[in-house]
Length: 371
Image (cartoon, rainbow, N blue to C red; front, side, top):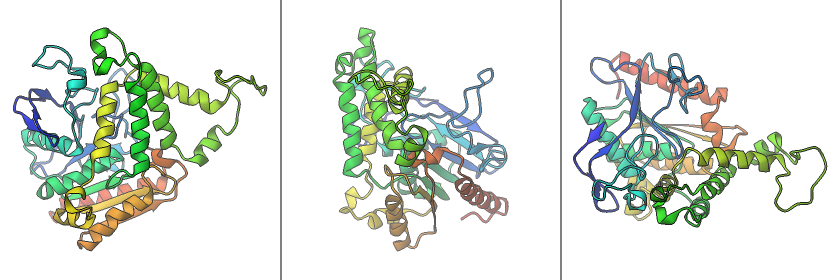
């Protein structure tokens, strides 16, 4: 969907003449009350479910969660996945042409925030004629967007579902993001963010950034279970400082190589900065309870015990502040071994919580009792 009109940005300035890529699943009901927006995390996109025809390995990134008969049942809901501005999967981003110069935006693409993404999503819904959402759903960075939706458009949503997320990043998370960004910007092929014009890609920096990120998505238990201290080739140590010897090294290098083949370096910088900046309590003296006072939606929050990047304590901060505002809140803390990646996996307790909650939303819609 193309937008000519300028979108004001939190950091000042605006962006005009931009596109938002989106996909929809299911059918919008007669009174347009069954729509759900799914917000994506760092390296995901608007393709949240299903496969593309003729591409059997093209499953959407949350295909286990969304679809006919699944916890978010597209026989009951009209699900909308929207690719964020600045991404590299269809929406306008740094690799696209800057109308002012006729060249790719590169490093000149404006810094965007979680709030900017939510505002852009709201504009797309305006075009679709959807004024009130049954729910906004997201995991990780997507959960931050769902939380932001409840604050920027409190009257436009009935439910906010925030999975494996946080009200802001702690210093350790910001530090991981900064190390990853430095790996990219110090790559000789980065060229100040204008590498498109030179026909190169800062692949080395992207590989390292992905390796760093991937370590934080897995728990220590999962790493030890999957890889332990297994050697890649036989049992003989090579006593080399540069060869790949351990299985975990091979796995991380594979993930880094794959990531660098499809993800955009400037997009990585933009999205990790948006993560860093998100902090709804900032304008309220750090008081999250005061920041969340405007929210009207009902909430479901889910966390996972071994997720040390977005630890359960961070979800409990949100729960506490919502309860202090007398909001309707459900909270599930799932004892799962998978770390942050658990929100993408098939833990039956997690799936049952989601199914039960969304069945409740559907039932309320059917009886016209949705609040």
